[in-house]
Amino acid sequence: NGVQSDITQKHSTLSETLNQLQTNYSSLTAERDQLQTNYNSITAERDQLLTNYNSLTAERDQLLRKLEDSCPQGWIKFSSSCYYISRETKTWSESRQYCREREADLVIINNKEEQTFLKGRNSGWIGLTDSENEGTWKWVDCATLTTGYWRRGEPNNANSGEDCAVMYSNGWNDISCSEKTNWVCEKPAT
Image (cartoon, rainbow, N blue to C red; front, side, top):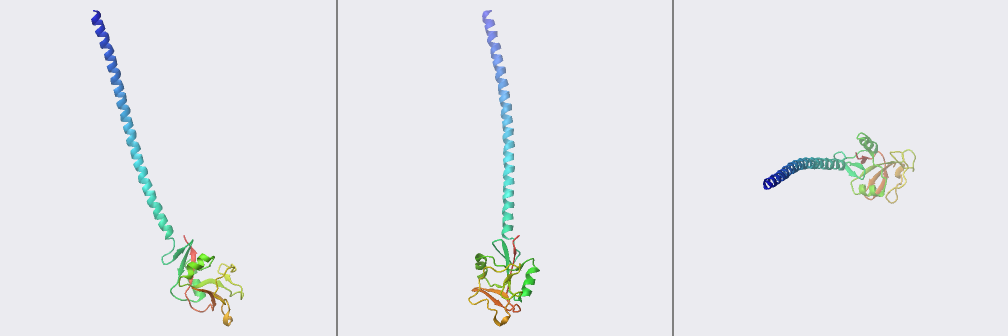
């Protein structure tokens, strides 16, 4: 009966081992299933983040295009301003009124880059006049002219009636404000 007892003992040990292995197998299977669920969840979250990223990238690109096109149709963007260069002609006052009706004003030339940008175009009236005080040139924002790009010999107030500034490709000239010429409006880009 010692053999019988030994066999029973080994059978019992094997049963316990089998039960332990089945428990381990079930536990590992449950853990694998949980990991698979986590993996699926993380994959879905990654896909959602990728979709959001693509959507935000498209929105950003659209906003950048809008920013580039932040000037009304027919206006030209340069630096942080929009410019309207007319094809028709008006007096200085009529030109200024045209600009103001469009939430702009005749151009104020602040630096050499702006001057260079504009002189290559068919310009015209700029927002500069000495009509209040002969020889004291003021911009439409009431600032006194500090740097000018006058043609040689200008301003000369020929015939004592040249109080408004016009821009040509080779520099500024003072002419009568009642003459009709093209003009340039300027307003901030939005």
